[in-house]
Amino acid sequence: MHGPEDGESLNDDQLMRRAVLVGEAVRGTTAPNPWVGCVVVSGRDPARMFEGATAPPGGPHAEVTALARAGELHTQGATLFSTLEPCVHHGRTPPCTDAIIAAGVTRVVIAMEDPDPQVAGKGVAALRAAGIEVSVGTAAAEVNEQLAPYRKHRTTGRPWVILKMAASLDARTAAPDGTSRWITGEEARRDVHRLRSRSDAILVGAGTVRADDPELTVRLGEGPTPAQPLRVVLGVAPPGAKVLPALELSGPLDDVLDDLGRRGVLQLLVEGGASVAHDFHAAGLVDRYVFYLAPLLFGGDDARPLFAGPGAGTIGDVWRGKLVSVERLGEDLRVEVAA
Image 1 (tube, rainbow, N blue to C red):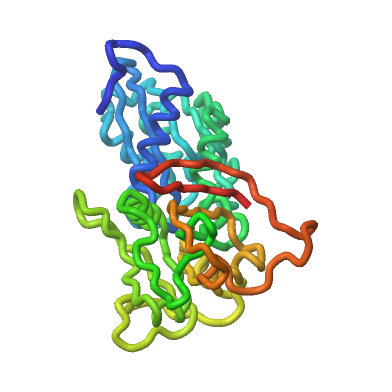
Image 2: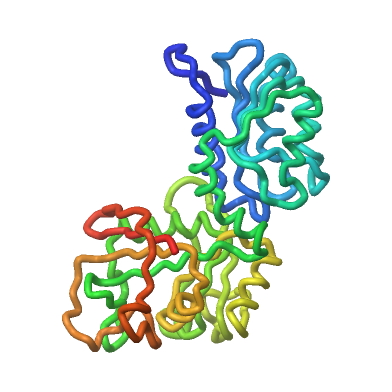
């Protein structure tokens, strides 16, 4: 339970942004469900707020958790803020709309409608039919970005694909002899583990497994042991590889993504190597690129590149994305680019 600082009342945008933060805290633990945040403002004492986030599969959704924490005393006449339209269908849990109506909530503020065909406006309609005032669109741009992996999965059946690569300033990932360990510094490596913790699966090629023998685990070094993403190898991992047990897949990348989507993977982190990175990029299957750039120069054309394979043959064919952010992490830069 929380309340506004110094008794100051919060507006809809501020309350929805609080719900965004609540949902972000459980990202990477909810698939195939979205990481939704909810804030209930008491109908009895508007200075009191109660929060909830989506539990792991089989557990309650954000709205039900927030309502339970508020209790009947505070839900009568309350306003509920949810980052996503409340569900109206029976899945692993009963409909959230039923819980909201039964709790006596009189106003619901939603950031975005649910793209899942089972909901898709039906939740809003059910609430309005029950006489509840419903507002849609508060902090919509922020939540659309936050839930982009969920939106893609529900509309295409495939996961949101992030390609992560670490490189020198001259776009090289390893020396000619293959040595490459710790191109980037500690802060950048910690950020990679945070990125892994927000992903449902991590994918590498079998060549990378043979060359580097990565674990592909989340090691945050603080708090409780984090949930571990599904480890995926393109090809066959050698016996005894640290990545095992892993899901080993082969065939066209489109089929691989369809397979992972059916398994409930909302966000896939592709970590290489250079041939796998090239193939995902060349096929136009990457939604976001995250580059960690270290202030290093290999200083020649014999060091190993970010992408292994044919590129654009002419300047008119060069791929151009949209710069999302540039962040300094210690001595390194984190550059995020949208497709």
